[in-house]
Amino acid sequence: MTEVRIPAFAKVNLRLDILGKRPDGYHELRTIFQTLSLHDEIRLRTSRGPGITLTIQGNASLTVEPVQKNLVYRAVEAVKGKLKIGGGVEIELKKRIPAGGGLGGGSSDAAAAMLGYLQLTRKKLPTADMLEIAASLGADVPFFLCGGRALGVNRGDEIYPLQDMPKMHVLVVVPRGIRVLTPEAFRWASAKPLGLTKSLVNSKLLRFCALSWSAQENGLSNDFERPVFRRHPRLEQIKRGLLQKGATEASLAGSGSAVFGIFPSPAMARRAAVGFPHDQTFVCETLSRDRYARRMRIAG
Image 1: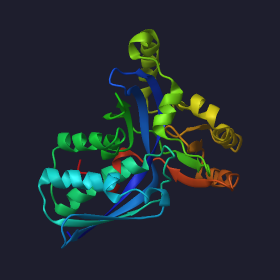
Image 2: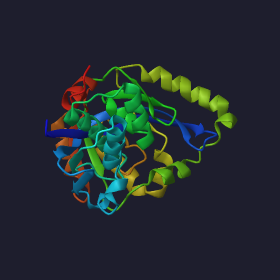
Image 3: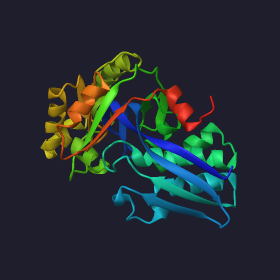
């Protein structure tokens, strides 16, 4: 095989609970990930020259950094090193998922690049090795090796697939001129050390577990909303606007800045999108784990 094309799908967090700050400085999370049909595209080709070349189209904010720091480059480099493959590879990344929106675009690109490179080289890696590489690239990357609806624990990097929910129609609104950096959002959340909030943690865990294992709609929830909305009131206005335009539920995507709403039909989502003329909008749908696996060509 000399060329592989593979999508890299966005995600939202249906629930995101921050339980507290761990001794290692990271935050203990419980989250429910859900993939969306919105996606970037990656093309990988074998190259006669050595090494890795990466070109990026769209989303100019990502092109200012050295390509060696891009997660796609680092993902392929890590898999290439693990497999001890000497041949070169050319990679083209076409961005559609906005950066800094909490939609997981960079993490998804990394996981897709790993899977695509294995397909290109007709090689396999043990699941444990894939997860180890993915976790080293970012907390969200392991989720994108399975997709669908899944529970994330610890930093969000320990993944447990959950039963898929019925397909939902989603409108994602990405506000112009607002970008929320995840480290800042965590600082704003002001989580206390885990040991000092044991009763609160246990209470949150019980509520979370009671909802996680149901395939029924269980309500959106995101602990980042209050601190992020306080600093960016425009995002709260978008959430309120989505609900006023017919969304059954709406929430901040990850740590933001994107906000998404769940609509009864794609037609209603498209009509609602017209009400945000100054922002980026994407009408999409949730993606089940089976459908995700087929699109990513992940073996069962």
